[in-house]
Length: 261
Image 1 (cartoon, rainbow, N blue to C red):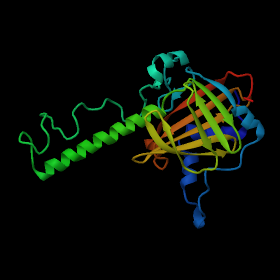
Image 2 (cartoon, rainbow, N blue to C red):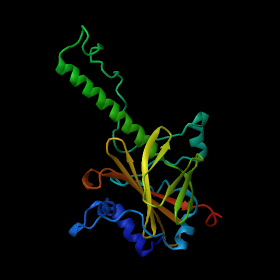
Image 3 (tube, rainbow, N blue to C red):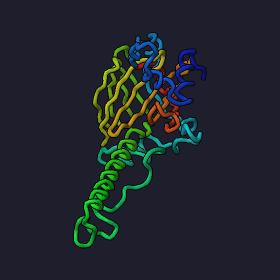
Image 4 (cartoon, rainbow, N blue to C red):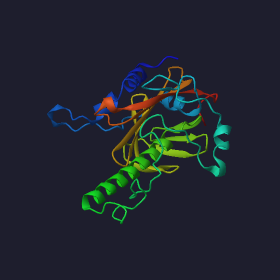
């Protein structure tokens, strides 16, 4: 599958880190304001090519750091079975905040007594440390929830692309519409709440996600030249610190005969 020249540039930047995002954030010399993510819409052929139904290619979708498969393939039916009552099926995220939530409740020490009680230390320093640990537990749990929901693997995608917006519906029939004006808007996905912006960059659609506690994530959608394969490049972390970033490179194959009407 060959990529167009603009798409190759976008894909190369995404695969090697966050160059595209970082370029958007850096202040050019001379005091000129940085350009916004939103730009002119691509050619109609790109909008038509992006629109359609897409099937997750588990063999080619890999963890960006290790090159290993992102997950074992699972059908949409399996995801539904794993999600009784309509709750979304999810997988454990490959990056960020791994491990299970500690069983000790916030504010309880290793001996099972509450900080400040007769069985524990009641000094101000100890109470402060317990509160700080409790806050760290809450923040870690919030990040795990966000990663879990944002890194679900939609094994089918239905996309409708237009100059002013891109609608993405997953195999659990959850639709999210992203305007391409670069303005920040609020979204919900399962238990996750986040803000996102959307925009066109050459022939690619890109959305940038912002969550609590400085969480940053980007998704870039790039077509192959024959428009039969879709690359979804996901990066997590601060683009100003590329060494801290992680992510996955997902591949989808077209399963509809052409763009949606």
